[in-house]
Image (cartoon, rainbow, N blue to C red; front, side, top):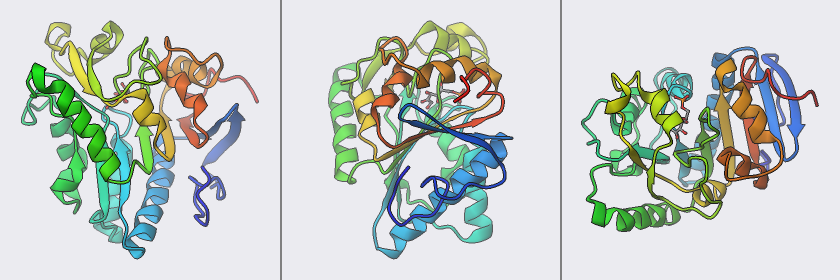
Length: 277
Ligand code: F6R
């Protein structure tokens, strides 16, 4: 992470005591923290610094956002920074990675609902500056909706920082195994591993949607910086595979090796399978 003039963990210049280890895995900078909460505190602090710097310049800061369990402590820390340290999100623009196809924004399992619950309802971000794919778009309008989503990202000036989680099968967003590097925002079928992991949230496997709208691999790789977060030993194998060659469609997170400003933010559990540097 090499933004000029920014002294933060993202920039790789300041490393706090909470960091157990930093290492380079090919092109990917890996930072291992003792606990996910410490990792999220540092990441949120670095984001706050960027947001404030842009505000001082009269510019927006554009974030790509994931849902799921991984970013929950990050969003909690961003909300705390807003409430207790006056961090304003008035100049922040967001684009979520994905949404289940067929779920309305009111559905509690939708990613719209997730984002309201964990972030948007608790900070001062203008609602028109937040973007999430529409899971209710008619099938014959889906392609146009996806093109419009890409156009909205371009109109916002591109994504400054793309935040990611990782699936057990190595997916990023809902770019499932087999996704192409050139893929763009589109309607996709969810992998069975992904549906299995979501079964608890939906009550049972049969209630998990079969499709989703996701931004593409190419959309993700166009972000200026990328931070992938992963916590816990259940993610360790996917993380280890993601940082290692070959880059292949079978593990979409390996495409991140092609980007020159990617950081993996891990805790002890998710780093257990990585080779020593
Ligand atoms: C969600 C998304 C997914 C998740 C991944 C990990 O918006 O894009 O790629 O980041 O499935 O999910 P959790 O964090 O629930 O383990």
